[in-house]
Structure formats: C-alpha cells, structure tokens
Image 1 (cartoon, rainbow, N blue to C red):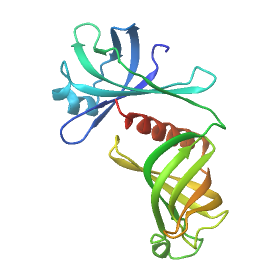
Image 2: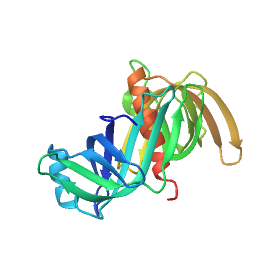
Image 3: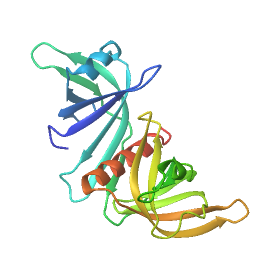
Length: 223
C-alpha cells in the first residue's frame, strides 16, 4: 500500500461513531500502522477518544492496482505522537477484509435497503414518495446489482428508481438513481421478488457509492 493513500478512520464511541479523514504514513509489518494526525473539526471532536486502547475501524481503497482493492479492518490505538511529526499509531490488524472492485464481478452482500419510484416529470412528487419497496440489497458491482423486496405494480423493467441503503457503520442512509432491468418472483405468496438493476449515477458518484456499500458490508461481518 503506497504512502499518502487516503484513509478513513471511524472512532467507535458510546453514542455516535466519529469519522476522520487522514493519510497513510507507513507500515511496520505485523506490528503497527502509522497515520497522519489531523487537526480539523472532526479530529477536535474525537480528541477525547484518541487514547491507547481505543477501538477504531479503518477503511481505504488501493486504486494503484488494476482492480481497485477495497480494504477494511478493526484495530485499536497504540499511541499518539505530537512533538515533531503528528502521528497516530495503531496496532497491526489481526484480520483484513479485502474485496477487488471489478467492473463485471458482483459481490454478495446483505444490507437493509429500499427502492423508491422516481417521480415522473410534471407529476406530484408527494404521490410517488409513498411507492416504496423495503428489503435488502443482495449483491452489487460497479455496474449494478440485485435488490430483494416487496413487488410493486408501479415498478417494471426500465422504471427509473432511487436505491436507498442504510449504512449502520456510517449511521446514515445513502441513495443513488438506478434503472430496473429485470424482475423475478421469489416468494409468490408474500409478493416478494428480486429486482435486477443498473446504477444510473455519474461515474464518480457510482464508484463512491459502491465502495462505501462494500466497505460497510465487510465491517458488519463477524470479527
């Protein structure tokens, strides 16, 4: 992993997790990892939690490789150095979650999600906000994925929708426009089906969305 790779650190707190942006300084193999110590508002907010033994979650994307590798792991703070070089030193992870983000490779996941019918041009937006299908995002790739949820008559092939994914690690809900490409009944009596879809957002928006979804799925896996 090259130095200066952008990294997101999530500090686990009793109330709400705090997200910190930093960069990789270096690695002492099997012993420790060193990050730059930040000074923005988020770092100031997290200051009282930044002490030895504090649990953290680290996430990064290695885009220097042919297939962008998404990495995530849990660790704890070892020490802070703030004299000449402001560094945050953490324990080397015992386990590393890694996924290669390939264009045509779908990654099996299981995240709480929903799809919502996009309002037609000139229609009352309030009417379509009720057309919501709750369920789970079952797989994802840089091009599209599959969603399992309630079958709605208003959703058919080529229907533009909004995919919303609840991200527990981030304590937020992310959304991105999609286009439905196929629908399969899977539980006839319960009116549940699988929606295959393509992601319709801009390239940068799509990549960011998929990376965050996969990273948060990895961090929900058993330690």
